[in-house]
Structure formats: C-alpha cells, structure tokens
Image 1: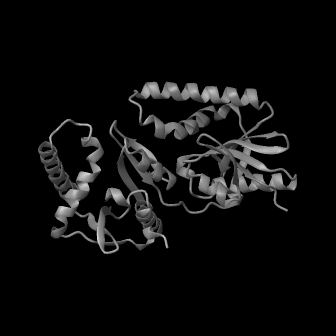
Image 2 (image 1 turned 120 degrees about the horizontal axis):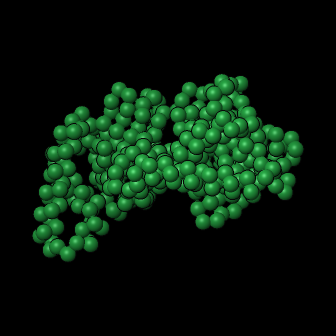
Image 3 (image 1 turned 90 degrees about the vertical axis):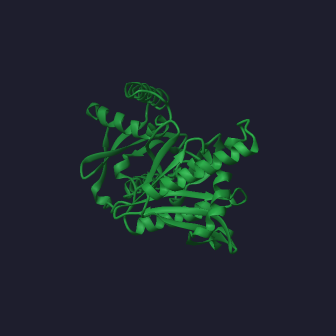
Length: 322
C-alpha cells in the first residue's frame, strides 16, 4: 500500500508548538549549515524567525486552516491553507526531513487540486526559487509561475475551463497578420523562466523577440516543407500547430495553446485530429516533450509512449491505430 495514502490531517493545537519549532528548524537546516555560527546563535536565530513566521501567518492569514500532518499516529508535518470564495492559497506545507521524497507532499497537494477543481477555484502558492525539488513537483502538477521576485516565485493552477465543442475548433494557415499573436504566444511559453532573471521589461522583451526569430529561422531552415497553422476557437486565434513529415513520420515541432484557453480540451482535440489523419495514412506521430512539462500527461493519455530520451527531452511516439 502506498504510505502517502495513509496520511491524515488534524487541527493544530497549542500542544504542537514544540513539534512545529522542530519542523521549522528542519526547513532552515541546510541554509544554516553554511553560516559559521555557534549552536546557541543558530538556536536564537531559529526561535526569532519561527515566532516571526507564526505572527505573520496569524496576521495575514487569519482565516487559514492550520493542520498537522499525521502518519501512523505521529506528527510528520504541517499544512496551512486559506480558503476563499474564488481561490485557495497553500500558505505552507512542510514535512520532517525523513518523510520527504516519499509522496506525502504530492498526495496532499493533489487532494487540494481536486478540491479546487471541484469547487472551480484558483489554487495558488508561493515557493522559494532555491527549492528546485518543489518547483519541479508543482510544475508537474500543472502549476505555472505568475510572478515573484529574486527569492520567491508565485505559482497558480486554474480550474479546468468548460469543455469546448470540437466543432468550434479549426485550423488555418499562418499569415503575416499573425506575427503579433505568435510573438505573444511564444512569450507565454518563456514567461516562467523569465521571472527568474533580473532583467528589465525591455530586456526581456528584446530577448523574447530574438529567441522567437531564431526559432522561426530554425524551423524554416530544417523543415522547409513544414506546415504552420493557427489553432482557432470560433474563428479566434488561440494557439498554433507546427508540424512536418519526415521519413514517413508526422512530427510535431510545436503545439502551443494560449494560457487562458488551456484545460478546455483544445489541445486534445487538435492532437486527436492529427492522429486520426496520420492513422489513415498508416503513419506514426512523434513529438519531443520535456520530462517536467505538465503536458506529458496529456500525451500519455492520448497513447504516446516514450521512444528515447536525450537529457530532459523525451521523444514521444504514437503508433497508427487500426
């Protein structure tokens, strides 16, 4: 049995303070190991920081629900969640070091995702940029970066949009009039990583333009027979599909749906249509997907399987159906 499925939550009580102090100290252990302080200095610092955190939570998140995470009748972590009419905020989730990496955190977050999805609420959180393990987990679970500063980034996961009828979805060839839309679409793909660099707005805009131009040139040079199409819903552009046929394989160079139109079945409908066409011609469909990309779940659900891996790039392949 998966141990993560056996965890429970109970309301935090005054008697949990010593445990919560120990839990907090564990979250700062790696950081303090790099500072040449005595044990007493570290203890004093941790006490001050813990009390400041508790005061901050009590002041800013007054209505938040504070729970202790329990496994086999023992406290192993804390969960602090603020529930509002249109949003849920994951204020804090912490686990003792010996219980990390076993799926406990992911299980709790997936529970919150289901709750937010059921109630059609936004789920948001803040995470330290240095916590790359948590960042990877949140991305894998469908969170996207929406802002932040040099130390923290804000992430959110929106509830699924109402499904769009396949009859409303269409493809048309790209024209010169689509340049501004395609640039904006490309910028949305790079938005997460650009929140992590200390550049001005103009510097980021210049970088995106340069990278977008380089991508267009690369595709045009390497795939001169490629097909570049705009994905439309009700005639309005919402994404793009770039594909090329190579060695009797239909290869997807890029499929991107604008953030505000994701989770409504648009990407699935476009992919399924392409897969039907390829199957009729007895051709497989391939695409490269990053191992951390949330869309990997969609491709697997549609029948794609990993054929090979180069670094963090997976070559996914769907065989023609009979």
